[in-house]
Length: 240
Image 1: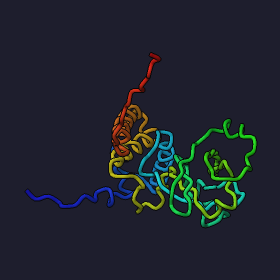
Image 2: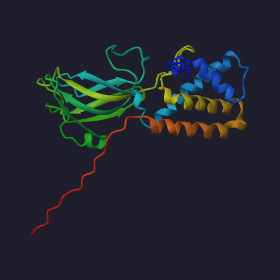
Image 3: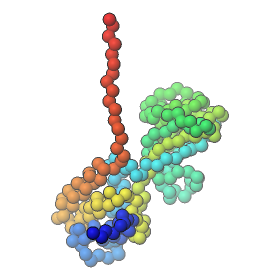
Image 4: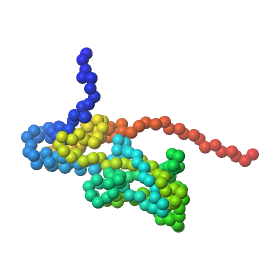
């Protein structure tokens, strides 16, 4: 039996193919340039909505920031289009998941992520030393990490290494590929068909929504990397 010998379908499935497939699913086979434009806009809105669906593991990335003597706050940006920021900064950051302090020997010391109330309760936020905690603030245009303790002269030049969630890239040109893994191609098309049905074929909205939610649920359940879990009972030693 002959097979194709390739597994590159998603690599050749461009934005215009996604739009065409979505329109066909709602029974629309003749559309204009403005229809393509509004479909691309809906696709970008859907990618933003996916950020509310939980963690997308293919967008988890790693980066290191060089620590500066006396600097408590470090900034990453949500957008690549602000045009005013340091070009060496990290862009497209949506949240910070975990972080470590990494010394000059490459040894990591885990940091504890704390909330705003815990950070606010710290009495001397400028006290210097090896950082042990960090507080993340999420703004409209940027993400900031506030360290405690503040890096001093001894820590300067060492690193804050962290994993962060990056935003899904915009659709962009119609000849681009979508910034999603192959497992999410079915729900991406179904989702765009659902969004377009709201504009062009309202009687199909409920049907398209059910198909979309079903395929997205399966994709989210498959996303990530399985790992082993160990449950150990706590041992008590009663007084005898």
